[in-house]
Length: 102
Image (cartoon, rainbow, N blue to C red; front, side):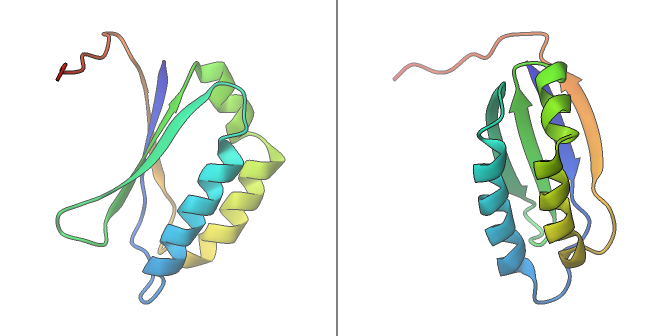
């Protein structure tokens, strides 16, 4: 599994609701790509600072999505809501996921 962690810059004043709506909309766009597993938005305890967590089957499927016209359109739509550019970090899962059984 390939994981992309995106540190979003500050969302412009008064644009938080619009940013969250964009994230929901873009989840729908990205969910149709081959290899897509999940995408989540995390907010820090300080409020107003966001991190995106994207899971894909492989780096190849992630890059196919990342280099697509759909992804560029999504970026064009959110760029004006942010004070700066997101900072990505990339990871590969090296150990399995353990989930507690009820």
